[in-house]
Image (cartoon, rainbow, N blue to C red; front, side):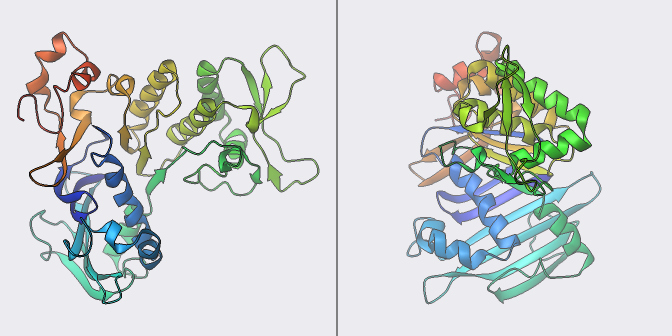
Length: 367
């Protein structure tokens, strides 16, 4: 998992260092910087896939650098990965501006058994490249890093409109892993049905617990096109019905995708989800929290949320508060300290403390 992350000069994040745990739930007001933290992983994904230049063209350097190119010259990111208490691997990068207004990798380092405060001891470095060398390197440590970086998946199921990829049919063979926008959800569920039937039944049962009108899913190749499949379902009490995904409510469709992500047999090492509670009933949110807790035994979860109900389901040490510091002109990140909240939690839930502004980016009364 990601043991430690450091970001400098990225969007609203001027300077942050944070230890990550198996469950990391980011809370804060609108515009505090939660989504900017999530988008950092999108940039890392672009760097790993050698799409940095495309990412910069789409996002614009002024929108990537903290307060734009005139204020921030370079942007820095660092992640340290661990699987045990004995060893770690690390990757850091420093992006600098081009004369044309773009960004390039001024320097990057891949490390093994490193110290957080030293970017050169036990590191191999590369300088002045448009795209990362990690992806194409054959070194032993970079093979490890590729395993970590390729296993960070950012899921986004906000779009449930009539044209949403979540509602469409897909190629039945597109089932290696669940895509980040859920476009291959029917194919992946079909794969689980055929290859992991017990797990598939548990997923179906979990979904039915918050959508009891569903009797069962119908997952099979299309009769007129064996290479395509769509998500269909039978209404409880009407065995002759046969509806498609366009008949699901937005919340039900999102929960189906979330349950599949969190219950899949071989999840990515790191799962990042922005506002997973969107459109969910409070009962579904509680079920979602239970799935997150269970999934954390096999994968690391990084979530941002606006849901008091979801926050209530976790422990203080799982929560990272995000606030905008007027003095520092940046997003500030702090993990809650259970000891500082123990007396409050005798009479209040975490969500109530958040609603009353007792917890924020600082610990209680630190403002």
